[in-house]
Amino acid sequence: MTTAAYRPTPAHELSSTSQPTLTSSSKSEDVNHQGLPIPRGPVTASLSFYDPPADGSKPHNFVEQQPEGIPQRNFGEAWHDVTINDLRGQESKFTMDNNAFSVVANLPSEEHAFDDDAHIKNVYYPEVEQLLLDNVPGSTRVLLFDHTIRRSSPNASRAPVTRVHIDQTPSSAEQRVRFHLPDEADTLLQGRYRIINVWRPLNGPVMAHPLAVADSATVRDEDLIPVEHRYPDRTGETAAVQYNAGQSWYYWSGMKNEDRLFLKCFDSDETVGQWGRVPHTAFVDPRTPEGAVGRESIEVRALVFG
Image 1 (cartoon, rainbow, N blue to C red):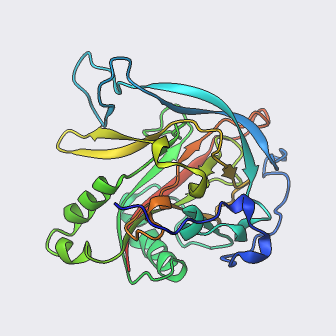
Image 2 (cartoon, rainbow, N blue to C red; image 1 turned 30 degrees about the vertical axis):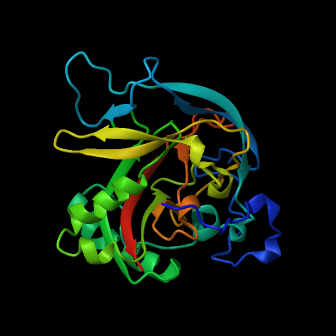
């Protein structure tokens, strides 16, 4: 991908009146259903960044299973204390083209249990597809290709990921198009295509393990490290993220079940594509009150064309 002349301005350098409004959010109750206070405002928390393999080898991560006696991944963690600012009250400053994330509030859903994959696909997927078509400028077609439910309980199959990462790289994004739409891929890859995750809590307001995102306009290409994502039947690619003091981090305090967070993992449009990727991670908020319920969430991943 060639470097484009366009450079989005980091959100912290913009006035609130200079940004288009995607949605408006009002302050919710400052206690949850347990009567516990919801942490608000900026917080300093420790985030896990990339630490390269000691032997200098290409970083990799095994998914689902790995060879006996081999660690799941060959790279380490570098923990850094980071100031994470609160999106609440300044949501309209952020857009997917400028920052690679955006939010929508107050959306009801006909799906409530989230305990049956077939029902999720039949009921929730159409809602997400329409949400993307309505809120992603230029979008004409959406293909939802998978989802992940994360729960903080000890027996959960997938827990919140406490490592800074990006789900796709340019090469793996192209692979996704070819994998899911092989007969149309050559044509679709000539136009604009994006990979966007739609994230929401299932038991909000979120108290434990909130999701942090970095303003993509403050993330350098040098901060991103391709990592082989090794499945039993194929190899994909994700991106690990090195710490850089210039990165600006945010979370959306007390996210409710009616809130949606868009995370753009890739954008083929070269005028915004270099910044079309958003590092993100769950984090431990040191202000989380004792006894708060663990976070449950769902992320749906989409190919967005147009």
